Every structure is written in C-alpha cells, then in structure tokens.
Length: 346
Image (cartoon, rainbow, N blue to C red; front, side, top):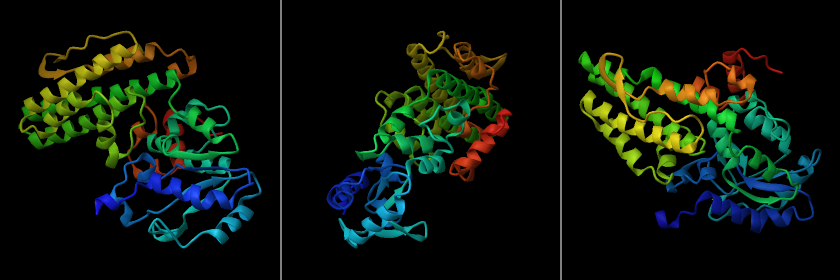
C-alpha cells in the first residue's frame, strides 16, 4: 500500500544513523545520499521501489582508506533493513547499499571535474543539469571531512555571468522556433504545429526553472519539478492550454501567455535591461512571438567576464544535446561541449 512506502531519503538517513554510523565510528568520513536515483531529488514513489531501490549511503574517506573501510562496513551490515535487502540489484548487477570512495575521484566521475578547485566556464557549461541537481540535492548525513558541504555550496547555483549566459541561450532556443507553431498551422500541418508547440513548452519549462535558480531535471521529472516552484500555477495553466490545443491559434495563445509571464519574471530579476513584455507579430506575418532574441541580447550585454561574453551563444551541455548517452557520461558531455565551443580539453 502507498501508506507503507518510506521515501528513499528517509530510509537511507535511518540506515546511516542506525547501521552505518556505528560501524565507522572513530573513522573520519563524510556520508550522504547524493548522485543518481529519484529518491535523491525526492521524486520517488512506491513505484520506484520495484527496481534499483533500497537503503543507500555514500561514505567518503581519506585517500588510501577505501578498501579497509569497505571491509569493515561489509562485515557489519545486516542482510535487510527497513524491509529491503542491503545488497540489491542495480541496473542488472549486485550493488551494495553502502559505497565507500574518495570524494575527488567520485566528483570527477559524476561531473568531469573537481569543484574544490577553481571552476572554469568549461566546467560549468559541460556539467549536465541533472548531475548538478543530484549533487546539490539529496542529504548530507555527516560531514566529518569538512569538504562535502563546501562542494555542494560551490555548485548550488551558477555564478551570475554563467547564469546570464545560460539564460540567454535558453531564450535563443525559444526564438529559433517560436514562429513555426503558426507557420505549420497556416499550411494545414496541425500535427507539425503540435510537435513544435510541445518542444517550445519544454523550453519554456526549463527557462522557468533556470530563472528560479533550479537546475532542470531530465524529462521524467521536468513537470514534477515545475509543480514544486511557488507561483507557477498560472504559467503551468498556460502551458497546459498550449499542449491541449486543437488549433494552432489556440496553441500560440497559450505559449504567448507563458512567454509574457517569463518576460515579466526576468525583468523583475534585474539580470538585464528590462524589455517590453508584450508579444508582437513575426515581421509582417500573422504569427505572434515574444522575440526571444531580445531577451538573450539584453542578458549577454550584462555579462562582465570578457572571455564569457565572447563565447558563442551555443549553450551548455543540455542545450547542445538531449542524448541520454551524452548527458549521463560526464566525459562525453565535456568533450561535446568543448568541441562545440572550440575549446581544447586540458
């Protein structure tokens, strides 16, 4: 029954406190539930427990101690906790519920860089949003090494200039397709208009989250993440109208209502010079658009870092590709981002 389900964060916090912490008492370590898993972002439900689910914890230790601490923990773990096995099937292979590792290598594996050092524009732009959300989300159970919370704080949100750049690129994604809802519909291609409209809805949702300082999660949780943001009920209703529309004019009206809300939000954020929030015709054609490039250009004009200001408006990893095989492999995402921008990998 749904009432019997214990969310993964709650389950894992209890697991660490009752079982794991006593086993590593006296050993300097940090422990958390961060990284992959719907429970890390608190999107898990009873459905989540049918695979890749159980009491989990990451235990970070000093260099050279991984093997010894792993053995000590393994020797003291029960077979089950909270009704779940402590070694469970994870993507087809047995996975212990406690993973002991060094923080630096783990960060490199998850991000492609170590944020305890200086974080470059390549670092920021190559890190997929889902990965950033997974490291800054979840819960830290203990930070005896004194570094994990610092890492999470460093990655909590983009530096302001990087934020402006990513927002500008997101507005450009809207600008590149916003007139096509009407153009497809005008020639009788309502299915094509609906496809473009749905694509634009996704871009609007991602822009809304970025404006609210939230890393957009991957597709499965995008709507759930939007629903958690205060003050987005009217925006969500506009997007629902766009998705449910049967004609391109209704679809366009829903999208335009959403555009104007995000335009007003950006103006209130004082990130760039305010722009007219009203929609307007696309040149002399009878299609209403917000003119996303106006907002992109205004944001770019406020970037103070000369190097970042000259970066081509191609965007971050999630704006360059939506391939799961790219975005779940940090080294690949880093290579793709560097190649797109003409940067040399160190």
